[in-house]
Length: 450
Image (cartoon, rainbow, N blue to C red; front, side, top):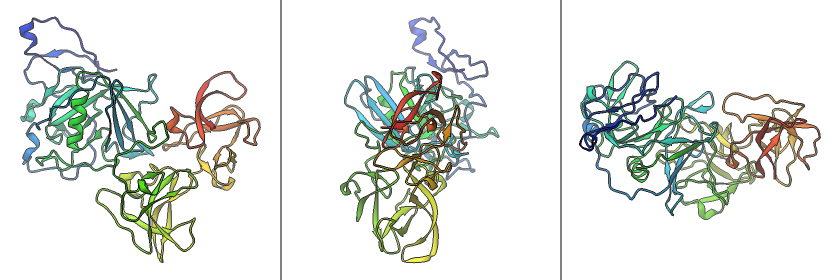
């Protein structure tokens, strides 16, 4: 249940003094309040998630100052797509040419899934902003913190013990209408929130469900979508353009998706094909060590499985990057350093987890022991079925039993991965509607060979 705006008839003079605050309570009621301070409900927000510099001395620096927001022209028909695997927020104007991609820090990983909810299970596969209601400014006094859908300036967050801290730093906060809790939203970076800039973003799985952005980026998004109930699609998979290129920010580093060496814009970078994903990734030759950069997982020099006697740089798994799982067909393996085999590290290596729908090069790589042919490239893991397929917890694709695809070399029923859209399917497969094997219903969208 979500709060809806209740229409109240007021005079024109009185209307100018009103600000809209949908109240969040168990009955999902809503109302319009006057400019008097409104207490924030104790269950208003989810826990915040890790913060690098929470203050305990009550000295909050610039955090209780509303940040100056440069004016930007609002879009005519904005739409947002968030990719959890891609760590991106993609804002477009469907009635214009605006198209920008921003880095984000969504929810931490728990039991294999980000705490940020996906919208793809909803009937319309969307959440919505409420930036169609009047924007609100929070106040520096924590006892007078306000509650709203559309903050131009928000400061305060209340922890489970009832303590308040101005971690939102006077930046915009855009709540989402549609998730199971209206506490989810898009806001500033949280870390170093006492700085005059509003803080700094860690691009990774760091929050407790909200989507963090750089201060300048959240101001840009907020200004562009004002006046609109903007659709927000949150999906697990990397978002892809019509030509199958990954939607990503401009900067490239190790394991960034690529098509040519020129896509890897760092010294010594080149594009190497991953035999499992059939897509390229950026790497660099190495003899023992690899360079690191701030904000990215540490690197490690490993033997190139496709080039005897040569080393290549890959990333190492960290909690902030969800191990290796956000990278297309990379798996965590403990390997020796190239040129120093006695030094072993967990590293992200080309490979397969072997679950239903994952690419595979041989039967033995699949948990079921069966790699289904799909054409000239790698196959996909499957298992025979007569009606239903077993699912696996922990962020793995849900499955469905369909008639074995033509050209697969199989007959009868076979298990395939379900999909919410084409982005969910590996290269060489297409998201299509298919009925259950030997039944006319139910019908599900599944990844089938092209």
